[in-house]
Length: 223
Image (cartoon, rainbow, N blue to C red; front, side, top):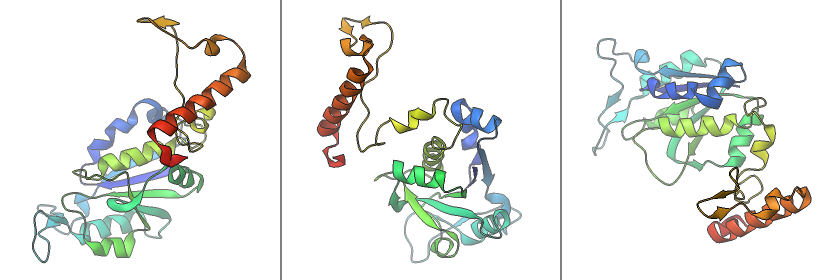
């Protein structure tokens, strides 16, 4: 999968070169590129990309020309699925992550800043607005990282164990069961006997029961 990210602060995405995503990029399972919007500004002296909003109000708004120029330079034939990370968008979910991963589409993510972007960019260029939750960030970069990380988990070869994405939280409208590893006892707390019994049928049943119990207590809406 190919993902390009438009941002005023592309260096924020350097962290994606680490860990699982870093290995996935090294092995060509996924391509992630963060691109600076500023060079696409018509203002070649100061590379200005924001201005005061019409109608007044606090803060600044990202102007249309630099974003429009960037999008159409990178994706002139609209071959990418274009997403604007916005608190006004549909709430991101594991189902949406899987849908994007399995669509085989290239993704172009736009990160807003300040009070947001000129609405005409959304009208002219954007296929979908996505929010990662009911809160506001200083910019769309962190939201884009969340989307990239989540989507990547459903791309073949990214995870070391492909079963990992099938048994984690939300995969079956359930929160995930508890995990334990060595030592068998820590600070007086022991690993449940069933997990060291060697009986896989009993282990599976215990995990299902624990997942149901946790979901009922913490997220009954999922049931």
